[in-house]
Amino acid sequence: MPVIPVRTALRNYDAVVRHGALQGLAEHLPGAGKVFVVSTPDVWELHGDKVVASLAERPHGVLLMPGGEERKRLAEVEALAERMATEGGDRSSVVVAFGGGIVNDMGGFLAASYMRGIPVVQVPTTLLAQVDSGVGGKTGVNLAAGKNLFGAFHQPCAVVIDPQVLETLPEREYRAGIYEVIKCGVIADRPLFDMLEQQRAEVLERRAGAVERMIADSVRIKAEVVSSDERESGLRRVLNFGHTLGHALEAETGYARFLHGEAVAFGMRAAAYLAELTGMLAAAEGARLRAVVDSYGPIPSLAGVAAENLVARLSRDKKTIQGRTHFVLPEEIGHVRVVTGIDPELVLSAARAALE
Image (cartoon, rainbow, N blue to C red; front, top):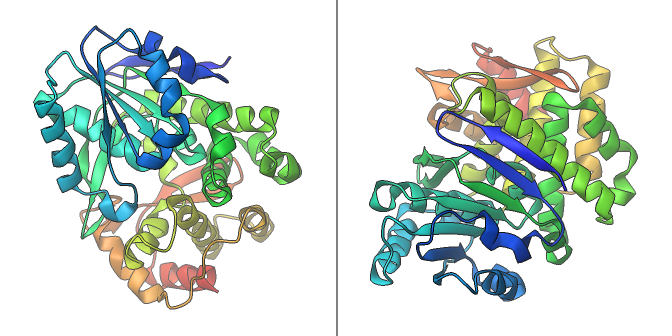
């Protein structure tokens, strides 16, 4: 059972990766106050009975919310908070964010904001959330201007990851999560990337050994980065590999066409092209990176998306500071660098190449 420590200035906690971990959820909850489980109807229908059984000795309530990026807005968090207040939530309460990345982000933001901050335990149920949004304390919602522009850093008390829940995950959602694992391999773990390249069948068949390795290695990478740079002032930016143009693609298509991981897949392809155009990345490495990304596709059609519109959106991205867009670009598989001041024409060329 991998137990991966996350050490930050705000809080030290563990990410537990264990088959059947849902049954032991209660042991990871702090205090004795009422537990509010934030989830979506589909996740609750599939796995809610395990959570209820685990919380049998603890007062608890369930707050179901609609899923989808288009509903990841401040009004939905306010609605959850109103229900918590009505159902007796106080400063001793605990939020359990039980669902995919959107639930983890919004449940974490609810906990960060309710009565100026109460504890949260993240229980991610999609592969993407297990390897990314469940760890690190970044919470928030979308604005019309862009993705995740309104939020807070709020570290959880624990992250409880049960790989068994992935058995019910739809195929498209599972593949979307694999793209985030590819990201981890590119930024810091060439052997993980090699595994994804060489053991594609085992990965797609969700064999236990491959799944646990993907989760544990990805969480370990994120934990190491977050422990060194909690608030994304430096090193943590490498976790945004593929996200710069990926976020632009999501916003450009109204958060309706692509899952987050699929947008990151596009963003990684574009970043590889940009790294080649700037002379940072050898063509062979770029081609290999894109081949592995493409092997876990396809992603939805890119028809009708204009490169010019994607590039125009970069000025409103969180990674643009004082008018300078920060790109995370690979120098080789397993190592990336944050770069600014890139010629906009090269960015446009890379976006066009990735759209082809």
